[in-house]
Image (tube, rainbow, N blue to C red; front, side):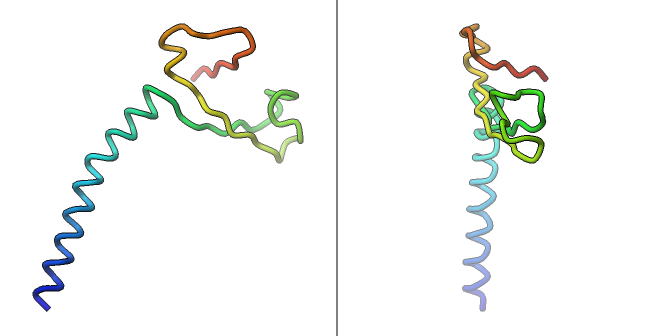
Length: 80
């Protein structure tokens, strides 16, 4: 029984160590490089959501290009 508790503690310790390393890396990546967003509604038709109100499209928001002012004609820019 004592050995099972030692194994459980080891797994919990490894989980939290990975969690506290992985979360800041993921948040930094999503904030600085790129993130995935869902576009809903009729505001972007006919380019996005051509099916109507129930349809939604998934887009990649590239933060890196905006920071380098690398926006070209035809790009979709999202403002928050």
